[in-house]
Image 1 (spheres, rainbow, N blue to C red):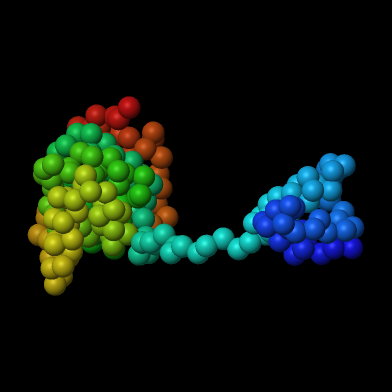
Image 2: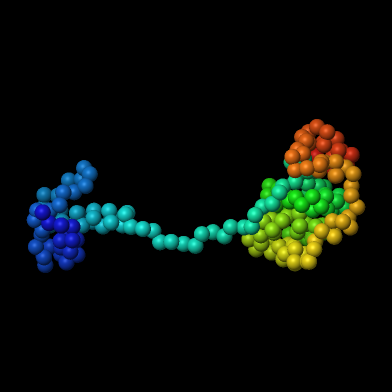
Amino acid sequence: MADWTDVVTTALLGTDRRPVPSPLPTPWGATRSPSDPATATLHLAAQHRAWSRAGSRLGTVEPPAVGPPLGDLAPAAAQELFGRLLDAADPVLMNAWLAACVRRGWVISPDYWQLLAVLTSEANPYDPTLLASALGSRGRWFLAQNPQWSRLGRQLMDAAMLPEPSPSADGVQEHAGIERVFGSGPDSSTDMAGGDDLEAQRLDIPRGA
């Protein structure tokens, strides 16, 4: 029986220039070879090419960039309050929230990164040093990936390059209501529909949609 090299070579050169191999290899699957040996040779060569390409290794590409570690997230109740503060656009309360978050070494949830970027990409009304710290290195990296947020991204990157961002947090007066929402640790996750919802009402923050 002829090998596949003979079949492919014959198909490339043409059956009028090279004798048809005999006997031809058995085709795969349920495909029936044409009765004409020359046509059968061409069909088998095409089948072999498809098989060889299907079994070839794909070219390698560089893996996508992976951002830095996320960090420890602020409690769920505090994160929901953050979302309401974004809607309210109150710089005083927001800076108090950011300061409370930074003092505890926590970061803003990725759930709010895009909304934050959209609302502040043109003009950031909040303390850039506090915001850079509260986003963490992963959040700042995320903002830098979108050219539409480049202005905000550069501002926060510059703020993060300061020797020690925490003094900005120490310079913001603590807000008792926000401190209560943060609770005493990362496991504090009181439902905002309960006690912390009343806290938000005391802060005069409208409930978001």
